[in-house]
Each structure stands twice: as structure tokens, then as C-alpha cells.
Length: 144
Image 1 (cartoon, rainbow, N blue to C red):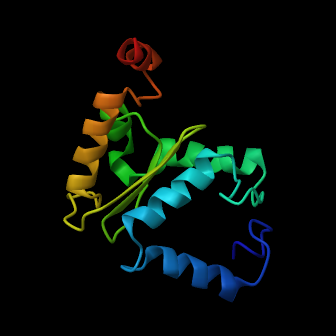
Image 2: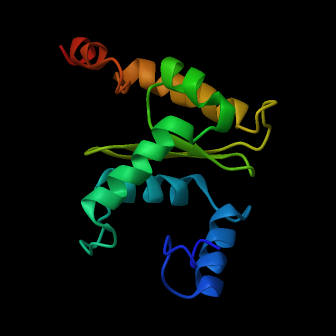
């Protein structure tokens, strides 16, 4: 359906294969962090190859910010303030634009479907290092 509306291009089977691999339990926290770094760098791989346009990467990070943790996104953004996408396997993929990615993996989920330990770790990291994009003054104060 998405292809018929022009929302995706390419072979649907290949696209689904990539999607299913990203959702698999074989994904590690390191792999999630690398994906986060890719989005944080505006769609550029670590080898310098551009895969997405800056606008496409911005749209994805925007979606992570507004709906990445399902119905828990608003509270997460208030508490943590880092664009993040959760996965039903217990992974969290966070992209901190211009800085890098953070990946966590801990299967116990809350009632909404997000990693309990991953959210706690992201909250702790955000507070410790001033990562909250909604409160940049907190970051400045931590750096001073």
C-alpha cells in the first residue's frame, strides 16, 4: 500500500527484510547506537556515504521525537528529552543530532510496550550529561 501511494521506493521484499532484521532479537545495543548515530549525523554512514538527505533524516528524528515511544512519547520527552524509537523486543534507539547515537536493550517492557530499564538509563544519561533537547539551558549549566 505504501508503495502504491509513492511513500516508499524499491523492492518491497528487500525493504521488509531490512525491517524484520531491525526488529529481530539479534539486534544489539551497539547496532542500535550505530543506527542512532546515522540519523544524528543527518543520514551519513560512518564511512562518509550519504544514504538519506538531511531533510529525510530530520523527518525521521522528528517522528522519533513526537511518536517514537507510542503513547509514552510525551512523558518520555518531558522526562528524558532525547529523540528515541522503541522496539517491541526491548530496544531503544536514540539519536542526539550532531553528537551521536545511544542504544539500549532490555526486554522487560512497560504497559505501553517500551523498555523499562532502557528508559531509566536514558533518563539517567540525559540528567548526567544534559542531553535534554527541550531544556538546552540544563546542558549549558552542566558544561560550565
